[in-house]
Image (tube, rainbow, N blue to C red; front, side, top):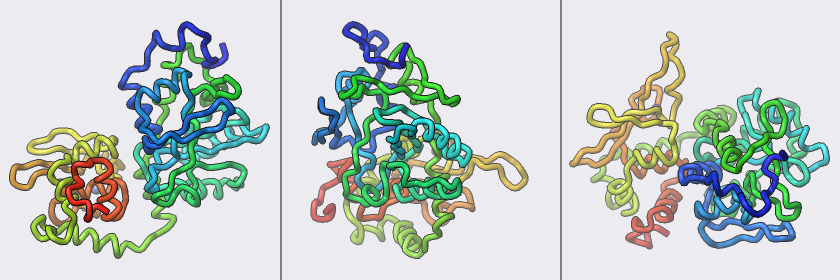
Length: 369
Ligand SMILES: [Zn+2]
């Protein structure tokens, strides 16, 4: 059986339905921004829809009822994946070789067939800056002696890395290409197309595919491009001030987020690999800002060092207990700053993002703008 040939009539994968849990995992993996999304037209082109892409829309794509392409960035310069598009006649074999070469550099990805060649997907475990993702990939290309211009990369820094721009749309895997009526296969580690009996099996196979650590890639990028940290340090100093001193100089949106948004929810959404667990009065997990999983110099395994706590007087706060971490010093910090640090944005950008996510935070529109 050809992998996921579009089923005629009856089954369409319905009997082995995609569950909410599966669809949410698919959404977490692929949706950089839910609005707008692009829908393939019968001539194979795509048209943007200025509506929110729902789990039902994602299911319709996977069941072959419609074919979606999603923006390759969140519009603020962050992405959850890179997709390399090869469309020369021999692209598929090149992409499979490239996949193996990149995997040896720590950038393991998944190859999927396409109409004219294939796509190589690199997935990140949380949104990361396009500049860092793209930069690390280019560095790997250079060290492998590969000409990067052979592939289209989505997103690329020129077109999609800047905040505010709508990233190009990339067709989601496993949908039916309307021009050919085909679903294109995923390729296994040996380079052979995968065979699945149902849509659900194919989706689960893809979702089990490991994601790269955004934290590790960002560290790699910073090592390649040491950036002056002065302004960041100043911002740290400002946001580490006690809450009362911050009032007046900072937006009410910041206070709204600090009061209403739990760091645990932010971590579950933006840094799920922190795996926060209840401990004593608070919660402890892996730090999203430094590598506390690595063994220490004596070879002892790493310990979780990121601490979150709630108390009636100060609300939610957090800090890292590791002296290796820049978030270990000073006062306990609050939710807004965690949100900012996880998204790697400026304060102003974070306020805009917060109002976008939690419209009720936008009590004073003049500040939010
Ligand atoms: Zn830390």
